Image (cartoon, rainbow, N blue to C red; front, side):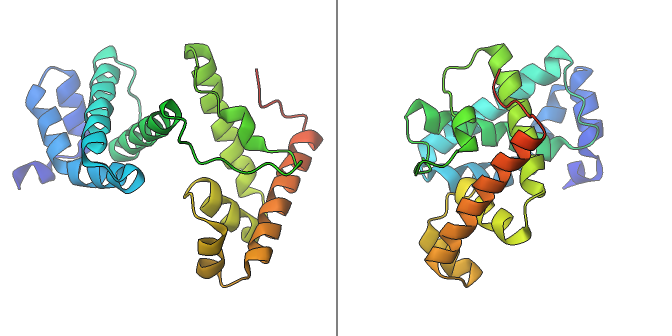
Length: 194
């Protein structure tokens, strides 16, 4: 296909300058990957279609407003928008996977507010970014379990099978991951709420 010879960055630039067909090429180029990603999270064709369309409505608004500055990282940027819209979908239906509290501090409770105004959304985005950076500091085994549980929504049984450790070991690693996150947050006086 001819449009694959033109980079995403050039197509984005052309679209911003008024060439509507450039957006069509971008959508055509990436629609399968984006739609598949959305469907892999919601398992519903109609909902996936809606979220896919909402993703590109957001893309168009951002591009038209002149706020896009991803410098050649169009697909990861669109995937982030799609990911956030999937999370919003689950929040609206109160179907967000919940981590069971057992008296331990849960860092995730600070980023689960569904009714966020624009300022809080910015803060939430920063909190999530800070949280991702903190997670990178965890020991590899704890980080692996936490990512599988919180971001991939895997059960402890699935985590156990994937990592080759017992369910109790996986639970222990999750517990220590949360304890270690809390220690880092307290040690560095990080504020994760506004």
